[in-house]
Length: 173
Image 1: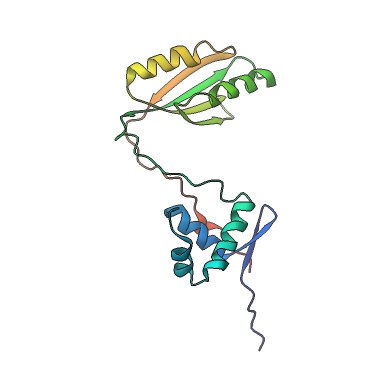
Image 2: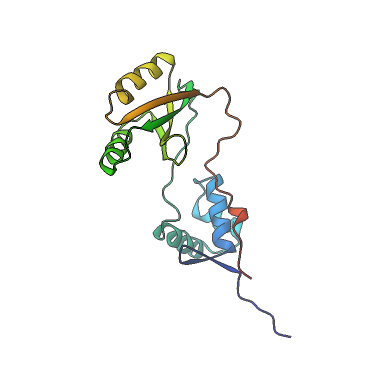
């Protein structure tokens, strides 16, 4: 009887990943401050092997960067808004100009270009209603090409996570 000892692999964006790579990603998503030694211990690998795998994931761009998540409420950013933008025209120059402007706005946490009723949705962190009014009046209303601005204010954050569902990646067998 022949036993297959090769690990199960999955190909993502042209790169091969095995279950250990996915376990590394799951672990560092939960705590990016894990030391290489602790991560190696948890995965039952040597520290050099763990470091090599981490380096491979970084070099491939799977790990984009390491960040610290701050508590927005404790820092006084009590107002989280979703601002929907509809553009007058969809010419490339107009869209690129809008996107460049949005990239310069530190209050904007996320900006997504959409299909459907609106062209963009911005996720914006502000301190209060006055900040919202000032932001819309000074940062959005004057922009050429903006046809409509609709703001929704967050009442309750039911779920917010930066963690991707790594456990749902299918391994080829």
